[in-house]
Image 1 (cartoon, rainbow, N blue to C red):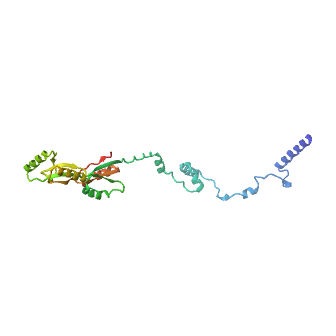
Image 2 (image 1 turned 90 degrees about the horizontal axis):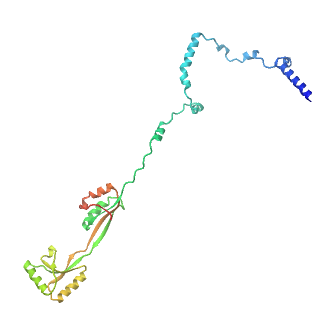
Image 3 (image 1 turned 180 degrees about the vertical axis):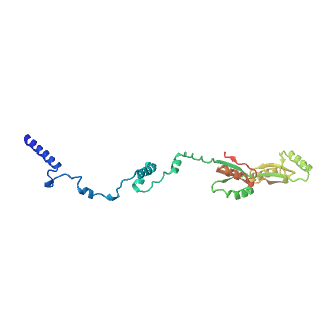
Length: 256
C-alpha cells in the first residue's frame, strides 16, 4: 500500500513539473503565459501613456504637495458613506451642557393678615376695593356688639336743677350716675342694662320707690363691626391693600 502511495506521489510531481514547464501545451494543458499577445490586447488607452520630462515631473510633485493638507484632513464616516459633506457639530448643545443648571426659584412667602374693625358704612366702601382682588383671597368677619339701655332722668335746664334732683334721689336711697351722653346731658342715669326688658323692670322698681319722670332710653345701640382677613397674601398685595384710603389708617396685622 505504501509503495502504491509513493508511486502515485512521484507521478503527481512529474505531471505538475510537465504542466508548469509547458510540456503539455500541445494537449491544451499549460499555465497562462504573461508574454502572450492577449495581454497587450487587454490594455486600456495605451496611446495615453507618455514619458514626462523633468520639468513636468517637478510641476506634478508641487501639485501633489499643495493638495496634501486637504488629503490629510480627517474624513467623517457619515460623509464618506453618503457622499455629502458632514454637518459641523452643534456647538450650542455643548454650551447648554456646560451651563450649570439653574436653581429653582423659592416660592414667594405668603402670610395671613387681618385689619379692623370697620363699621357698616366703612365696610361698604371697602368692599368696592376688595372685589378687585382674586376671588377667595379675602374675607370679612363680622362681630355683633350688643346694645345697652339706661333708666334715665332728665334733661335738666341747668346744673342747679340737676343737683337738686340728685339730692332727692339720694334721700330715697337710690344710686345715681351721669348720663355720659352729650345728647342727654345734663341728666341722671339710674342704671344701665344689656336688655331693654331688664331696663323696664328696673324702671318699674324705681316707680314703686317714688321716682317720677324716669324713662328707658338707648344708651348704646346694637352695632355690627367687621374685620378684614387675607388668608394668604403676598408682599405686593399687602402693600396694595395698605395703600387704600378706605383702610382709614388701620394697619394689616398678622393673624392671631
